[in-house]
Amino acid sequence: MKKVTLLIAGIWSIGFAGLINCVHYRTVSAAEETGMSHEGVVLPTRVLMHEIARRTSNILEGTLAGSLKYVAQEAGAIVDDSYKINEVFFPADPKSNKWLQQAKIDPNDTEKITKLKEEFHIYLKNITSSALEVQKAAKAGDQKATFKAFTNMVEKACFECHTEIRDKMIPIENR
Image (cartoon, rainbow, N blue to C red; front, side, top):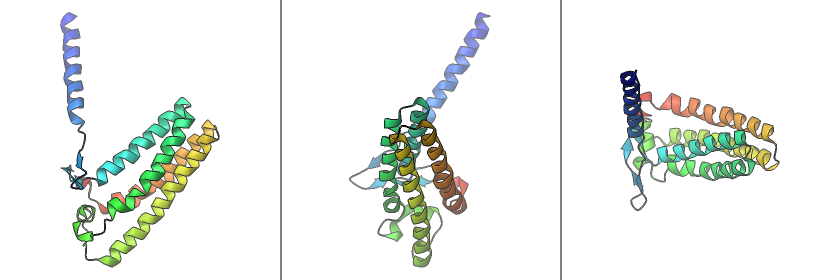
C-alpha cells in the first residue's frame, strides 16, 4: 500500500511540475516596442488578447462570488483594453505589421486592410458596448443581470470575432 501511495504521489508531482513548466510568461521590451515570438504568434498581439481574456475570467469569477464592484472595475478595464486593439492589430506601417504577415495578408493590399479594419471596428464596438452593459448591471448590484450581460458579451463579442476573424484568417498552427 505504501508503494502505491508513493507511486501516485510521484506521478502527481511529476505531472504538477510539468504543468508549472508549461506556463511561460511573455515579456515585451517597451523600449523597443517589440515582442518575443511564441508558438507562431507575435507579441504584443498575444499579450493584449491574454489581458482581455484574464479580465473576462475575472468578471466571471467576480460575478459568481458576488463581488460586483470588482466586476464593474474589470468590465471598465476591458473597455480600455479594447481601444488598444486597433493600435496593436493595425500599426501605422502595415509593412512592419507581424499580425498581417501571420494572417498571410499582403501589407500592400490597402483595400483588404481597410476592409479588415472596418470589420474590426464592428467587433470593437461590440466589445465596448457589451462590457459597458456588464459594468452597468454590476453597478446596479444585480448579479443575475450581470451574469446575463457577461454571457451575452462572450457570445456576441468574443465568439463572433474569433469565429470570423481569428479562426477564418489565421491557420491553427499559427495561433
